Image (tube, rainbow, N blue to C red; front, side, top):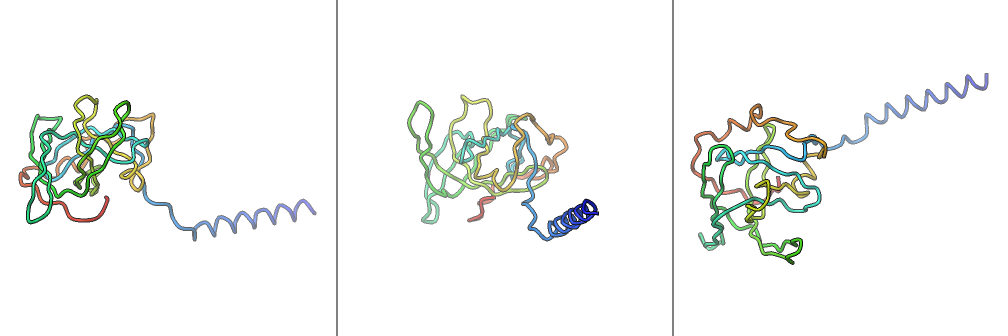
Length: 189
């Protein structure tokens, strides 16, 4: 009889815990991505391979011909991007968000410009900041750091290309768009 009461109390406690779990706040919606993923930069629909790096705070983008200039009393940055698919080259102009110093292994630190761009992955668009840097000595032109990943994805270090570029709805966005639109102010993603 005592064992029966203990069993009933346990079941009531379990039911209570399960029913109150429904009232608990839901975790943020995050997707699982591999340590390498294809992403698209909009509005140009440039497909790039991104390395997802939880050890890096800031995202970095391979850029050529980085030049600062003034427009309407504000500092801007002009730079060149290349697609991995078709050798398409795009000249991009964006407002300078800020300048940062990034620690580099065996080199000290380097000064980099930061701009906001629109990245598209798995049919979703994200506004995020990138430091502009020459990554020609690296295997992948784009690195996505914690500032992007923290609200968006969980990285499965054993997987690559969990979402294939060919089936990504982002692959069709921006087709035929050639005029870069200024990035909106604010918003990390």
